[in-house]
Amino acid sequence: MKHLYSLLYLLIWIPVLSFGESFQGKVYDVTQYGAVSDTTVLSTEAFQKAIDTCAAQGGGTVWVPAGKYLCTTVMLKSNVNLYLDAGSIIYASRKLSDYQNLKHKIGAADNGEAEILIGAFQAENISITGYGSLNCRAERIGYRREPQTAVTDSVTGREIANAIHYGADYQSKFKKVPPCPGAINFTECKNVHIRDIQVIESSFWSVHLQWCERVYIDGIYITSNSHNGVNADGLDIDGCNNVMINNCRIDTGDDALCLKTTLLNGQSRPCSYITITNCILTSSSAALKLGTESHADFEHITVSNCIIKNANRGLNMIIRDGGSARNILFSNLTISTQRKETFWWGNGDPIWFTIQKRGNKPSGNIENITLNHIIAHGESGIRMEGFSNQLKNIRLHDVQLFMEPEQAIDKRSRNGFLFDGVEKLSLTDCEVHWNEINPEKTWESAFMFKNVNNLKLIRTYGVKAPLSKFPVFRYENTLQPQIVE
Image (cartoon, rainbow, N blue to C red):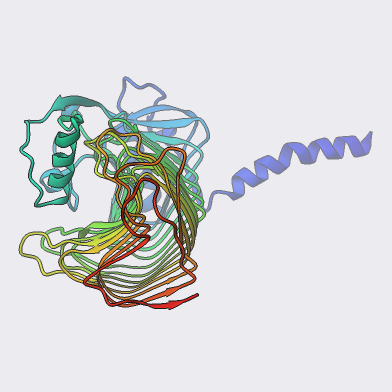
Protein backbone atom coordinates (compact mmCIF):
# COMPACT_ATOMS: atom_id res chain seq x y z
CA MET A 1 0.00 0.00 0.00
CA LYS A 2 2.87 2.35 0.83
CA HIS A 3 4.31 1.80 -2.65
CA LEU A 4 0.89 2.46 -4.18
CA TYR A 5 0.65 5.84 -2.42
CA SER A 6 4.15 6.71 -3.60
CA LEU A 7 3.22 5.87 -7.19
CA LEU A 8 0.05 7.96 -7.01
CA TYR A 9 2.06 10.86 -5.57
CA LEU A 10 4.45 10.71 -8.54
CA LEU A 11 1.64 10.46 -11.08
CA ILE A 12 0.05 13.58 -9.63
CA TRP A 13 3.19 15.67 -9.36
CA ILE A 14 5.13 14.74 -12.50
CA PRO A 15 2.71 16.64 -14.84
CA VAL A 16 2.72 19.62 -12.49
CA LEU A 17 6.50 19.72 -12.35
CA SER A 18 6.75 19.32 -16.14
CA PHE A 19 4.24 22.12 -16.68
CA GLY A 20 6.13 24.40 -14.32
CA GLU A 21 9.47 23.64 -15.93
CA SER A 22 8.09 24.62 -19.36
CA PHE A 23 8.05 28.25 -18.17
CA GLN A 24 11.29 30.13 -17.70
CA GLY A 25 11.19 32.94 -15.13
CA LYS A 26 8.03 34.51 -13.76
CA VAL A 27 4.54 33.70 -15.03
CA TYR A 28 2.03 36.46 -15.76
CA ASP A 29 -1.57 35.28 -16.13
CA VAL A 30 -3.49 37.52 -18.56
CA THR A 31 -6.71 36.98 -16.61
CA GLN A 32 -5.07 38.62 -13.60
CA TYR A 33 -4.72 41.76 -15.72
CA GLY A 34 -8.34 41.84 -16.83
CA ALA A 35 -8.54 39.45 -19.80
CA VAL A 36 -11.86 37.62 -19.99
CA SER A 37 -13.01 34.54 -21.85
CA ASP A 38 -15.70 36.42 -23.74
CA THR A 39 -15.63 37.05 -27.50
CA THR A 40 -17.82 40.15 -27.11
CA VAL A 41 -15.34 42.01 -24.90
CA LEU A 42 -11.92 43.23 -26.05
CA SER A 43 -9.05 41.93 -23.92
CA THR A 44 -6.35 43.79 -25.85
CA GLU A 45 -5.43 46.15 -22.99
CA ALA A 46 -5.19 43.28 -20.51
CA PHE A 47 -2.89 41.26 -22.80
CA GLN A 48 -0.71 44.29 -23.46
CA LYS A 49 -0.48 45.15 -19.78
CA ALA A 50 0.60 41.62 -18.89
CA ILE A 51 3.27 41.71 -21.63
CA ASP A 52 4.52 45.16 -20.65
CA THR A 53 4.73 44.20 -16.97
CA CYS A 54 6.56 40.98 -17.82
CA ALA A 55 9.09 42.84 -19.98
CA ALA A 56 9.58 45.62 -17.42
CA GLN A 57 10.39 43.07 -14.73
CA GLY A 58 13.08 41.36 -16.79
CA GLY A 59 11.01 38.91 -18.80
CA GLY A 60 9.25 35.61 -18.35
CA THR A 61 6.08 33.93 -19.57
CA VAL A 62 2.75 35.56 -20.26
CA TRP A 63 0.26 32.74 -19.77
CA VAL A 64 -3.03 32.56 -21.67
CA PRO A 65 -5.21 29.96 -19.91
CA ALA A 66 -7.90 27.97 -21.70
CA GLY A 67 -10.65 30.28 -22.91
CA LYS A 68 -11.82 32.40 -25.84
CA TYR A 69 -10.39 35.94 -25.94
CA LEU A 70 -11.06 38.85 -28.29
CA CYS A 71 -8.17 41.13 -29.25
CA THR A 72 -6.87 43.62 -31.75
CA THR A 73 -3.13 44.33 -32.02
CA VAL A 74 -0.92 43.09 -29.19
CA MET A 75 2.82 43.84 -29.30
CA LEU A 76 5.36 41.42 -27.83
CA LYS A 77 8.38 42.83 -26.02
CA SER A 78 11.91 41.51 -25.50
CA ASN A 79 12.39 38.47 -23.26
CA VAL A 80 8.68 37.55 -23.28
CA ASN A 81 7.23 34.14 -24.09
CA LEU A 82 3.53 34.27 -24.92
CA TYR A 83 2.27 30.83 -23.93
CA LEU A 84 -1.11 29.75 -25.33
CA ASP A 85 -2.38 26.97 -23.11
CA ALA A 86 -4.30 24.05 -24.62
CA GLY A 87 -7.88 25.19 -25.15
CA SER A 88 -7.00 28.87 -25.46
CA ILE A 89 -8.05 30.77 -28.59
CA ILE A 90 -7.25 34.42 -29.31
CA TYR A 91 -9.75 35.75 -31.83
CA ALA A 92 -9.06 38.83 -33.95
CA SER A 93 -11.75 41.50 -33.79
CA ARG A 94 -13.90 41.80 -36.90
CA LYS A 95 -14.71 45.48 -36.26
CA LEU A 96 -12.71 47.83 -38.46
CA SER A 97 -13.02 50.66 -35.91
CA ASP A 98 -11.15 48.55 -33.33
CA TYR A 99 -7.99 48.84 -35.46
CA GLN A 100 -8.04 52.62 -35.77
CA ASN A 101 -4.43 53.87 -35.75
CA LEU A 102 -3.22 50.30 -35.27
CA LYS A 103 -2.03 49.47 -38.78
CA HIS A 104 1.63 48.57 -39.18
CA LYS A 105 4.00 48.92 -42.08
CA ILE A 106 4.29 45.59 -43.88
CA GLY A 107 6.47 44.87 -46.89
CA ALA A 108 4.37 44.23 -50.02
CA ALA A 109 1.07 44.58 -48.13
CA ASP A 110 -1.87 46.49 -49.56
CA ASN A 111 -0.81 50.17 -49.49
CA GLY A 112 2.22 49.12 -47.45
CA GLU A 113 0.14 48.64 -44.30
CA ALA A 114 -1.89 45.88 -42.66
CA GLU A 115 -3.63 45.06 -39.42
CA ILE A 116 -2.00 42.38 -37.27
CA LEU A 117 -3.02 40.36 -34.24
CA ILE A 118 0.37 39.66 -32.58
CA GLY A 119 3.28 41.91 -33.52
CA ALA A 120 6.82 42.74 -32.47
CA PHE A 121 9.34 45.34 -33.62
CA GLN A 122 13.08 45.24 -32.87
CA ALA A 123 12.54 42.84 -29.97
CA GLU A 124 14.92 40.11 -28.80
CA ASN A 125 14.37 36.69 -27.25
CA ILE A 126 10.66 36.49 -28.02
CA SER A 127 8.44 33.47 -28.49
CA ILE A 128 4.91 32.24 -29.01
CA THR A 129 4.49 28.68 -27.78
CA GLY A 130 1.88 26.27 -26.45
CA TYR A 131 -1.03 24.31 -27.87
CA GLY A 132 -3.57 27.11 -28.27
CA SER A 133 -4.71 28.97 -31.36
CA LEU A 134 -4.75 32.35 -33.07
CA ASN A 135 -7.89 32.77 -35.18
CA CYS A 136 -8.28 35.86 -37.38
CA ARG A 137 -11.77 34.87 -38.64
CA ALA A 138 -11.16 36.03 -42.22
CA GLU A 139 -14.13 37.01 -44.35
CA ARG A 140 -14.08 37.07 -48.15
CA ILE A 141 -16.61 37.68 -50.90
CA GLY A 142 -16.75 36.59 -54.51
CA TYR A 143 -16.93 38.91 -57.49
CA ARG A 144 -16.45 38.79 -61.23
CA ARG A 145 -13.68 40.71 -62.90
CA GLU A 146 -14.13 42.51 -66.18
CA PRO A 147 -13.92 40.44 -69.37
CA GLN A 148 -10.40 40.24 -70.78
CA THR A 149 -9.07 40.08 -74.30
CA ALA A 150 -6.89 37.18 -75.34
CA VAL A 151 -3.35 38.53 -74.82
CA THR A 152 -0.23 36.40 -74.55
CA ASP A 153 2.49 38.84 -73.45
CA SER A 154 2.59 37.58 -69.84
CA VAL A 155 2.09 34.35 -67.91
CA THR A 156 -1.29 35.49 -66.60
CA GLY A 157 -2.29 36.75 -70.04
CA ARG A 158 -1.46 33.41 -71.62
CA GLU A 159 -3.48 31.57 -68.98
CA ILE A 160 -6.49 33.84 -69.58
CA ALA A 161 -6.17 33.43 -73.34
CA ASN A 162 -6.07 29.67 -72.89
CA ALA A 163 -9.15 29.79 -70.63
CA ILE A 164 -11.02 31.86 -73.24
CA HIS A 165 -10.05 29.33 -75.91
CA TYR A 166 -11.47 26.41 -73.91
CA GLY A 167 -14.47 28.31 -72.53
CA ALA A 168 -13.30 28.13 -68.89
CA ASP A 169 -14.47 30.62 -66.25
CA TYR A 170 -11.61 33.08 -65.69
CA GLN A 171 -13.70 35.97 -64.30
CA SER A 172 -14.66 34.57 -60.88
CA LYS A 173 -12.42 35.80 -58.09
CA PHE A 174 -12.49 36.56 -54.35
CA LYS A 175 -11.47 39.57 -52.28
CA LYS A 176 -10.98 40.20 -48.59
CA VAL A 177 -13.51 41.98 -46.37
CA PRO A 178 -11.84 44.52 -44.02
CA PRO A 179 -10.45 44.41 -41.43
CA CYS A 180 -7.78 42.09 -42.78
CA PRO A 181 -5.39 41.15 -39.97
CA GLY A 182 -2.55 38.71 -40.28
CA ALA A 183 -1.98 36.58 -37.19
CA ILE A 184 1.74 37.26 -36.53
CA ASN A 185 4.12 39.92 -37.82
CA PHE A 186 7.61 40.30 -36.36
CA THR A 187 9.99 42.86 -37.88
CA GLU A 188 13.73 43.23 -37.14
CA CYS A 189 13.64 40.81 -34.22
CA LYS A 190 16.37 38.48 -32.94
CA ASN A 191 16.11 35.01 -31.45
CA VAL A 192 12.51 34.29 -32.39
CA HIS A 193 10.79 31.03 -31.43
CA ILE A 194 7.33 29.89 -32.59
CA ARG A 195 6.36 26.41 -31.48
CA ASP A 196 3.32 24.09 -31.53
CA ILE A 197 0.59 26.72 -31.93
CA GLN A 198 -2.24 26.76 -34.48
CA VAL A 199 -2.89 29.74 -36.77
CA ILE A 200 -6.31 29.79 -38.38
CA GLU A 201 -7.94 31.89 -41.12
CA SER A 202 -5.80 34.99 -41.43
CA SER A 203 -7.01 37.57 -43.92
CA PHE A 204 -3.46 38.53 -44.82
CA TRP A 205 -0.16 36.60 -44.47
CA SER A 206 -0.65 34.31 -41.49
CA VAL A 207 2.87 34.37 -40.05
CA HIS A 208 5.15 37.04 -41.53
CA LEU A 209 8.70 37.35 -40.21
CA GLN A 210 10.57 40.24 -41.79
CA TRP A 211 14.26 41.05 -41.37
CA CYS A 212 14.61 38.72 -38.38
CA GLU A 213 17.75 36.93 -37.20
CA ARG A 214 17.94 33.49 -35.57
CA VAL A 215 14.45 32.14 -36.16
CA TYR A 216 13.24 28.76 -34.91
CA ILE A 217 9.83 27.45 -36.00
CA ASP A 218 8.74 23.98 -34.95
CA GLY A 219 5.55 21.96 -35.02
CA ILE A 220 3.07 24.70 -35.92
CA TYR A 221 -0.16 24.23 -37.89
CA ILE A 222 -1.41 26.94 -40.24
CA THR A 223 -4.62 26.80 -42.26
CA SER A 224 -6.79 29.05 -44.43
CA ASN A 225 -9.67 28.34 -46.78
CA SER A 226 -8.47 26.45 -49.85
CA HIS A 227 -11.29 27.78 -52.03
CA ASN A 228 -11.28 31.53 -51.31
CA GLY A 229 -8.25 32.18 -49.10
CA VAL A 230 -6.68 34.90 -51.27
CA ASN A 231 -3.58 36.58 -49.76
CA ALA A 232 -3.79 34.18 -46.81
CA ASP A 233 -0.24 32.84 -47.11
CA GLY A 234 0.84 30.44 -44.41
CA LEU A 235 4.43 31.15 -43.38
CA ASP A 236 6.37 34.01 -45.02
CA ILE A 237 10.10 34.29 -44.26
CA ASP A 238 11.05 37.73 -45.55
CA GLY A 239 14.67 38.86 -45.66
CA CYS A 240 15.61 36.71 -42.65
CA ASN A 241 18.89 34.99 -41.77
CA ASN A 242 19.74 31.82 -39.84
CA VAL A 243 16.30 30.21 -39.92
CA MET A 244 15.27 26.66 -38.98
CA ILE A 245 11.76 25.43 -39.90
CA ASN A 246 10.81 21.92 -38.79
CA ASN A 247 7.82 19.61 -38.46
CA CYS A 248 5.15 22.04 -39.69
CA ARG A 249 1.80 21.34 -41.35
CA ILE A 250 0.61 24.19 -43.57
CA ASP A 251 -2.62 23.99 -45.59
CA THR A 252 -3.61 27.30 -47.17
CA GLY A 253 -5.42 28.95 -50.05
CA ASP A 254 -2.52 31.17 -51.05
CA ASP A 255 1.18 30.22 -50.79
CA ALA A 256 1.88 27.76 -47.97
CA LEU A 257 5.57 28.42 -47.18
CA CYS A 258 7.18 31.33 -48.97
CA LEU A 259 10.62 32.92 -48.81
CA LYS A 260 10.51 36.56 -49.88
CA THR A 261 12.76 39.59 -50.09
CA THR A 262 10.21 42.40 -50.16
CA LEU A 263 10.87 46.09 -50.47
CA LEU A 264 9.95 48.22 -47.45
CA ASN A 265 10.74 51.94 -47.22
CA GLY A 266 13.16 51.54 -50.11
CA GLN A 267 15.07 48.71 -48.42
CA SER A 268 15.30 44.97 -48.92
CA ARG A 269 17.39 42.31 -47.17
CA PRO A 270 18.51 38.84 -48.31
CA CYS A 271 17.12 35.48 -47.21
CA SER A 272 20.07 33.27 -46.30
CA TYR A 273 21.18 30.29 -44.21
CA ILE A 274 17.77 28.64 -44.04
CA THR A 275 16.84 25.00 -43.44
CA ILE A 276 13.36 23.55 -44.01
CA THR A 277 12.68 19.93 -43.09
CA ASN A 278 9.96 17.43 -42.20
CA CYS A 279 7.04 19.61 -43.32
CA ILE A 280 3.77 18.78 -45.10
CA LEU A 281 2.54 21.56 -47.38
CA THR A 282 -0.71 22.08 -49.31
CA SER A 283 -1.81 25.15 -51.25
CA SER A 284 -4.24 26.30 -53.92
CA SER A 285 -1.36 28.46 -55.14
CA ALA A 286 2.29 27.53 -54.49
CA ALA A 287 3.19 25.06 -51.74
CA LEU A 288 6.85 26.10 -51.38
CA LYS A 289 8.06 29.25 -53.12
CA LEU A 290 11.02 31.61 -53.36
CA GLY A 291 9.71 34.95 -54.66
CA THR A 292 7.94 36.50 -56.38
CA GLU A 293 9.09 39.43 -54.24
CA SER A 294 12.82 39.12 -54.96
CA HIS A 295 14.46 42.51 -54.44
CA ALA A 296 17.42 40.92 -52.60
CA ASP A 297 19.14 37.53 -52.83
CA PHE A 298 18.24 34.02 -51.63
CA GLU A 299 21.35 32.05 -50.64
CA HIS A 300 22.50 28.93 -48.77
CA ILE A 301 19.14 27.21 -48.37
CA THR A 302 18.26 23.52 -47.92
CA VAL A 303 14.85 21.87 -48.17
CA SER A 304 14.62 18.18 -47.23
CA ASN A 305 12.26 15.38 -46.24
CA CYS A 306 9.09 17.29 -47.09
CA ILE A 307 5.76 16.30 -48.63
CA ILE A 308 3.89 18.60 -50.98
CA LYS A 309 0.36 17.40 -51.65
CA ASN A 310 -2.67 18.61 -53.59
CA ALA A 311 -0.98 21.89 -54.55
CA ASN A 312 -1.62 24.05 -57.60
CA ARG A 313 2.13 24.47 -57.86
CA GLY A 314 4.65 22.44 -55.93
CA LEU A 315 8.20 23.75 -55.68
CA ASN A 316 8.74 27.25 -57.12
CA MET A 317 11.43 29.84 -57.68
CA ILE A 318 10.07 33.00 -59.30
CA ILE A 319 12.75 35.68 -59.59
CA ARG A 320 11.42 39.02 -60.89
CA ASP A 321 12.91 42.01 -59.04
CA GLY A 322 16.67 41.84 -59.58
CA GLY A 323 17.65 39.54 -56.72
CA SER A 324 19.26 36.15 -57.30
CA ALA A 325 18.74 32.62 -55.95
CA ARG A 326 21.90 30.56 -55.58
CA ASN A 327 23.50 27.70 -53.65
CA ILE A 328 20.23 25.90 -52.87
CA LEU A 329 19.66 22.18 -52.31
CA PHE A 330 16.31 20.33 -52.51
CA SER A 331 16.32 16.67 -51.49
CA ASN A 332 14.02 13.80 -50.56
CA LEU A 333 10.69 15.31 -51.59
CA THR A 334 7.42 13.85 -52.76
CA ILE A 335 5.19 16.21 -54.71
CA SER A 336 1.65 15.89 -56.03
CA THR A 337 -0.08 18.75 -57.84
CA GLN A 338 -3.59 19.36 -59.06
CA ARG A 339 -5.01 22.23 -61.12
CA LYS A 340 -7.24 24.58 -59.12
CA GLU A 341 -9.79 27.14 -60.28
CA THR A 342 -8.56 29.49 -62.97
CA PHE A 343 -8.20 32.54 -60.70
CA TRP A 344 -5.50 30.71 -58.70
CA TRP A 345 -2.11 31.21 -60.30
CA GLY A 346 -0.69 27.84 -61.32
CA ASN A 347 -0.65 25.06 -63.88
CA GLY A 348 -0.51 22.02 -61.65
CA ASP A 349 3.25 21.91 -62.23
CA PRO A 350 5.31 20.07 -59.58
CA ILE A 351 8.36 22.30 -60.12
CA TRP A 352 8.62 25.71 -61.78
CA PHE A 353 11.75 27.87 -61.75
CA THR A 354 11.68 31.09 -63.76
CA ILE A 355 13.44 34.42 -64.21
CA GLN A 356 11.07 37.13 -65.46
CA LYS A 357 12.01 40.77 -65.40
CA ARG A 358 9.43 43.05 -63.78
CA GLY A 359 9.30 46.71 -64.79
CA ASN A 360 12.67 48.42 -65.08
CA LYS A 361 14.38 46.17 -62.55
CA PRO A 362 17.54 44.34 -63.70
CA SER A 363 17.25 40.62 -64.34
CA GLY A 364 18.20 38.41 -61.43
CA ASN A 365 19.72 34.93 -61.57
CA ILE A 366 18.98 31.35 -60.54
CA GLU A 367 22.26 29.46 -60.22
CA ASN A 368 23.95 26.54 -58.48
CA ILE A 369 20.74 24.62 -57.75
CA THR A 370 20.60 20.89 -57.01
CA LEU A 371 17.51 18.64 -56.83
CA ASN A 372 17.99 15.12 -55.44
CA HIS A 373 15.62 12.19 -54.95
CA ILE A 374 12.24 13.63 -55.93
CA ILE A 375 9.06 11.78 -56.88
CA ALA A 376 6.53 14.08 -58.53
CA HIS A 377 2.97 13.43 -59.75
CA GLY A 378 1.58 16.41 -61.62
CA GLU A 379 -1.14 17.60 -63.97
CA SER A 380 1.59 19.53 -65.72
CA GLY A 381 5.33 19.11 -66.09
CA ILE A 382 8.56 20.31 -64.52
CA ARG A 383 9.56 23.65 -66.03
CA MET A 384 12.69 25.78 -65.76
CA GLU A 385 12.48 28.92 -67.87
CA GLY A 386 14.91 31.82 -68.12
CA PHE A 387 12.78 34.36 -69.92
CA SER A 388 14.98 37.37 -69.12
CA ASN A 389 18.24 35.68 -68.05
CA GLN A 390 19.69 32.19 -68.25
CA LEU A 391 19.53 29.82 -65.29
CA LYS A 392 23.04 28.56 -64.54
CA ASN A 393 24.45 25.26 -63.25
CA ILE A 394 21.27 23.29 -62.59
CA ARG A 395 21.65 19.66 -61.50
CA LEU A 396 18.85 17.07 -61.21
CA HIS A 397 19.50 13.61 -59.79
CA ASP A 398 16.92 10.84 -59.40
CA VAL A 399 13.87 12.92 -60.31
CA GLN A 400 10.85 10.85 -61.36
CA LEU A 401 7.90 12.61 -62.99
CA PHE A 402 4.49 10.99 -63.38
CA MET A 403 2.29 12.94 -65.80
CA GLU A 404 -1.40 12.82 -64.81
CA PRO A 405 -4.50 14.01 -66.74
CA GLU A 406 -5.79 17.52 -66.02
CA GLN A 407 -9.13 17.86 -64.27
CA ALA A 408 -9.65 21.43 -65.53
CA ILE A 409 -11.22 21.98 -68.94
CA ASP A 410 -8.67 24.60 -70.08
CA LYS A 411 -5.76 22.27 -70.84
CA ARG A 412 -2.29 23.70 -70.23
CA SER A 413 -0.03 20.68 -69.95
CA ARG A 414 2.47 20.11 -72.75
CA ASN A 415 5.89 18.58 -72.00
CA GLY A 416 7.21 16.45 -69.15
CA PHE A 417 10.47 18.30 -68.46
CA LEU A 418 10.87 21.70 -70.13
CA PHE A 419 14.16 23.63 -69.95
CA ASP A 420 14.30 26.97 -71.75
CA GLY A 421 17.30 29.26 -71.26
CA VAL A 422 19.77 27.28 -69.16
CA GLU A 423 23.57 27.39 -69.09
CA LYS A 424 25.09 24.11 -67.82
CA LEU A 425 22.36 21.57 -67.15
CA SER A 426 22.85 18.03 -65.87
CA LEU A 427 20.19 15.28 -65.54
CA THR A 428 21.07 11.97 -63.92
CA ASP A 429 18.64 9.07 -63.45
CA CYS A 430 15.63 11.17 -64.41
CA GLU A 431 12.51 9.64 -65.96
CA VAL A 432 9.04 10.53 -67.24
CA HIS A 433 6.01 8.24 -66.87
CA TRP A 434 2.82 9.07 -68.79
CA ASN A 435 -0.67 8.12 -67.64
CA GLU A 436 -1.59 5.78 -70.49
CA ILE A 437 -5.14 5.08 -69.28
CA ASN A 438 -6.30 8.72 -69.47
CA PRO A 439 -3.83 10.54 -71.74
CA GLU A 440 -4.11 14.20 -72.71
CA LYS A 441 -4.17 15.18 -76.37
CA THR A 442 -1.99 18.20 -75.57
CA TRP A 443 0.98 16.15 -74.34
CA GLU A 444 4.12 16.55 -76.44
CA SER A 445 7.67 15.44 -75.49
CA ALA A 446 9.03 13.78 -72.38
CA PHE A 447 12.04 16.13 -72.44
CA MET A 448 12.11 19.52 -74.21
CA PHE A 449 15.34 21.55 -74.33
CA LYS A 450 15.31 25.09 -75.75
CA ASN A 451 18.23 27.52 -75.67
CA VAL A 452 20.29 25.20 -73.45
CA ASN A 453 24.08 25.22 -73.46
CA ASN A 454 26.36 22.53 -72.02
CA LEU A 455 23.73 19.80 -71.54
CA LYS A 456 24.61 16.43 -70.00
CA LEU A 457 22.20 13.46 -69.76
CA ILE A 458 23.15 10.44 -67.67
CA ARG A 459 20.79 7.44 -67.53
CA THR A 460 17.85 9.70 -68.34
CA TYR A 461 14.88 7.94 -69.89
CA GLY A 462 11.42 8.49 -71.26
CA VAL A 463 8.93 7.10 -73.72
CA LYS A 464 6.78 8.78 -76.30
CA ALA A 465 3.63 10.35 -74.87
CA PRO A 466 0.38 8.61 -75.80
CA LEU A 467 -1.34 10.35 -78.74
CA SER A 468 1.72 12.56 -79.30
CA LYS A 469 3.42 13.19 -82.64
CA PHE A 470 6.52 14.61 -80.94
CA PRO A 471 9.75 12.73 -80.15
CA VAL A 472 10.72 11.72 -76.63
CA PHE A 473 13.69 14.14 -76.60
CA ARG A 474 13.33 17.44 -78.45
CA TYR A 475 15.97 20.13 -78.96
CA GLU A 476 15.58 23.72 -80.16
CA ASN A 477 18.62 25.99 -80.39
CA THR A 478 20.43 23.42 -78.26
CA LEU A 479 23.56 21.44 -79.17
CA GLN A 480 23.22 17.69 -78.97
CA PRO A 481 23.95 16.75 -75.38
CA GLN A 482 26.60 14.52 -73.90
CA ILE A 483 24.67 11.29 -73.23
CA VAL A 484 25.84 8.58 -70.81
CA GLU A 485 23.81 5.36 -70.64
